[in-house]
Length: 328
Ligand SMILES: NC(=O)c1ccc[n+]([C@@H]2O[C@H](COP(=O)([O-])OP(=O)(O)OC[C@H]3O[C@@H](n4cnc5c(N)ncnc54)[C@H](O)[C@@H]3O)[C@@H](O)[C@H]2O)c1
Image (cartoon, rainbow, N blue to C red; front, side, top):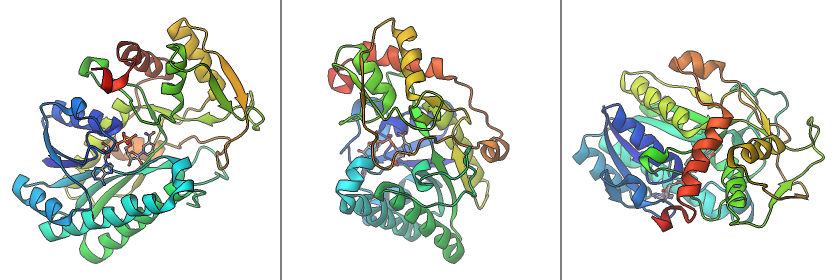
């Protein structure tokens, strides 16, 4: 199997390419480094370019004899997508369609796609099954859903095989591989908590403490990036073996509140972590937890890494790299 990973120099992508290499898979990265870090993929075959460059996509697939694409490259901040939806439709739909066309021209028809729990919108039932209605409440989720739908039509018309993985909250790090989370700006809870523990932020704002949850803060499903990466290797193998694919959630099935995350982080770091209560953020559902039974059965996969270990691995990386990759 030969795999091309778009966005492979990003947070999740870099963990996936290392996991593919551990599994002996020939791996090439296509990334424009607009948000990613070349340091995280040193020694990998990196094609620096845009997914919207159809000619580059076609030539790369042909010259590298690629069988399967893992499509991670995207814009992925909910708040930014509300302020500037055009950028999200441009990257997550328009350029991603150029990528699909480049694949079609090259005769490569298998894709693992990074989708998101954001496609569900405000859940009516929790844990969320894949059959739950997809009614996104922001442009980020809408663009992910739009591309999933395009993949469905490409399957019907052109015989594409695709596996869409709807991630819940990816977190954690692999400090042994010098891999961690470094977004700019950072919007994810665990790095924000740990940057506060390091004194890089004065305090952590808890957005909403009046949700209908036991402690009033939002509940999310945190999955370690390595568990996530293992599922991608399985998905790529399935497609390579001829599976037509399907849509799967990628979460653990366990919900943890913001306040619980902070409490675990305090015990892991031994630091105080000052907090401040703030208002709810528009469009933030109270609870997002995956039903993971379809994924576990479909991939013969179970998430192995519990929340405490997720936070320990992230703390290890952040405390060694307080300036992120810029400090390496
Ligand atoms: N982090 C999460 O918890 C989470 C949750 C749900 C879904 N996702 C999805 O997973 C994927 C990866 O997320 P991440 O947190 O690793 O993001 P990231 O921003 O760290 O990585 C994205 C990578 O894509 C590259 N890229 C962006 N636009 C590009 C373009 N037009 N051409 C080429 N390269 C481009 C960036 O340089 C970067 O390396 C995204 O598709 C995101 O929507 C992430």
